[in-house]
Amino acid sequence: MLLLRREYRDGAEPPEIVLLHAEVTRHGGPSGPTRRFTRVAVPSDPPGRRVAHLPLPEPGEGERILVRYRFSTVRGGEERFSPSYEVGIPSDDAITDLYRIPEEGAGNLPAAKGRGHFRLVLPLGEGESASGPFRFGFGAMRKKPSPSLCRAVIDAGNGPAPVIEAPEALAVLKNRPMPYFLYHVSADGRLRPDKIACARITLADPEGDVVSARMVWGDPAWRATNLSLMEAKGYAPGPGAAGDEFFAEDRAAFLAAREAALSLLPVPRIFEAFVFGPSGSRVEYCFQVVSRRPAGGFEVRWRNREGGGNWVVTL
Image (tube, rainbow, N blue to C red):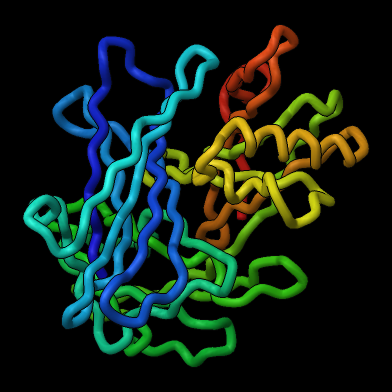
């Protein structure tokens, strides 16, 4: 697996949040579906720069990976989108921004159909060193634990514990992601399992003025930050679906279609999404909503816990 680094540079007025939206396609071999990613660009050194990493498949003989991406920012209630950019893999334009995570065989197990990946800090056992190489992988609940499931290697150097990409689920039952195990092996050679669980988070919209709802979530230290688009309960599949928001060619048409579909749902409307992580861990989260202004146009607002701060859920 490859990681492609993309960088955003703040201007004179730094945004409150920066997101990277990318579509990844393969050319010259088995095409497969286009994969979409939205990643939070996090502050990096030197100050004023933000970085996000995109997981990419390694191109085979004669293959080329095309990444089409753009950034979005929010500041003072306004959301802005950058022009779209393209980069091919392999190419001289990308070679200095590519990082390889070695994988054995066919690599780690993929996410279930319709589910994506999330970022998390690799959970360490008591007394386990945070430095050096780690092998990691995933297995179903009934799968016999084995180091052979750990098919990817990431080097944490001198620490801290590395941030990895993990599937939201390996299987889904009645629209709910099912738990599975994350396994890892560090320098001491011990196989350590962690059950990956989820929690369903809801946001109520009693007035019916929310057009788009998003949830920003991560570990309490915010080393691994994620963003999930929240869908309204009862929203019928079709134009204006939440998952298409950041990839719509005509944003005005998308928002119009979404408003029309939402108007058919009774209020209060309930928006929902899942957070993921090791069982027993704590996840912090807050919301970002897009609402129509009475005078026209749209406004992006943050919603935090009453009195300030983020909500917390234990998985």
